[in-house]
Image 1 (cartoon, rainbow, N blue to C red):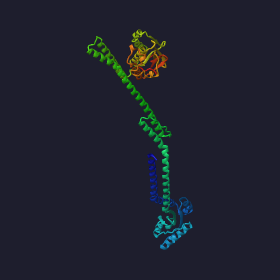
Image 2: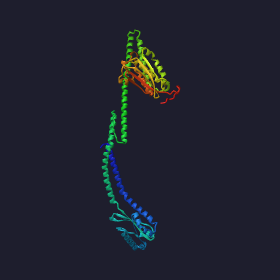
Image 3: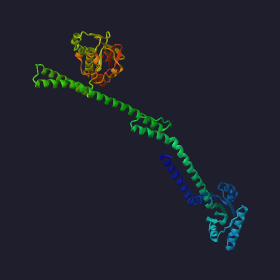
Amino acid sequence: MNKLSRKLFWRLSLLVCFVFVLSFLVNEYFLPKYMLYQKKMNLAALTGEMLQKDAAALVLDKNRLEQEYQVTIVSLDFNAAAGGNANVNAFNDAVRTQLNKEGITLAKFWITADSLDKLSRHEPVYKIYDQGKLETSYLVTLLNIGQTVFLVGDFVAHSEKSLQAVNRFNLYIAVGALLLTIGLSWLIARQIVRPLTAMQKTAEAISNLDFQTSDVRTGDEIELLSRSIDEMSLKLKEAREELQRQNDNLQTFISDISHELKTPIALIKAYSSGIRDGMDDGTFLGVIHKQADEMAGLVDRLLELARMKNDPNRPEAFDFQLLFGKVAAKYAIEIRRNRLAFEVETPEGGFSRVWSDSQKVETVLDNFMSNAVKYTADGRIKASFEERGGRLTFSVRNGTDGLLPEDIDNLWQPFYVRERSRNKRLSGTGLGLSIASTLLQKLGVPFSAVAQEEEIVFTFSLPLVSSEIQSDKKTLPPE
């Protein structure tokens, strides 16, 4: 028996013992008085009814009153008791005779002269006679109504032996209740304690970072609690996996940024040593300046990435095609220089006003175009617009020499580059797509990168603004 079962057993046992002791004390000290009180109240009610009638009516109504109140009623002429002790004896004999006719024989019964005096004054007389070995008492009320004495009597059983029997029976009940308590504790251990034990083991496993679940099916609040613990375990597991992923990304980020800074630092050290040793041919300072600029540019991109995560959105209505044309114009020289085929596909008569933060969208487009220009494998780049479901979907695609699944998953990570597909002359830091994904997440718009045969397609969509809305209004577009 576990701790909870023992606790339930002892508490239920103490409750049974308390109820038994309380019942014993009540029976011993209060039950006899209560029974006598009930008898007196019954006789008082009968007396009140009898005093409202005359003697003749009471004689006729005697049988009904006896049955209704469960008493014995006898009557006799009061004049037989008038005038001294000899008449007292005669009155008592007359009363006994009437009681004997009713089948009542009393061991102890005597009506005194004082009682007769009260009757002569029409005052009621109340007496109780202990019958000794008969273990009963006889409760008597005497009334003088119209010179007819009515005796109302009722037996009151002595309760000692009855109480002993009741208390003995209660003792048997208490013993049986204790045995029942043991059985109930065992059942509770099976129906309640076992699920709690399973939940406790699950909680211990969670505290040891072993995110388990417990299949508890009780159909009550315990099952609801178990489900809450299971949900907590799953969410903690997901949070830990996400934290581990972020830690891995951080380690990769630190490794990558160290690698990116290592080369320019090494060059700066080498060329500065050459200047110190008098080996400068006039180009060393230029190389040092160029490497310093590259490191400064890298730091600026990193600061930009950190800033964008906290920069609030400033949505407005703007023409997406015009914005894209502005971005694409910056790469016209690079496209011509590298003899790239650049194609833009737009829907005929389409309306391209969207609602978003134009500065963030411009940065996203700039990074997508930069990525496409640097890494296209077949010299082709294609941008397209499509209106669908109240949104404008933009995609840019370029040729690739084949992507692995892990390449797609890592494209959005900082400093991730695929060296075999990179144009060395145009290669960058690998931060562009990471900045783009950070901004798109900040804007709350859907985006994706999908490999299709020998191409990779970057896509995102923005909510359209209806043609009736003027460009200078800051009204949210319909969803």
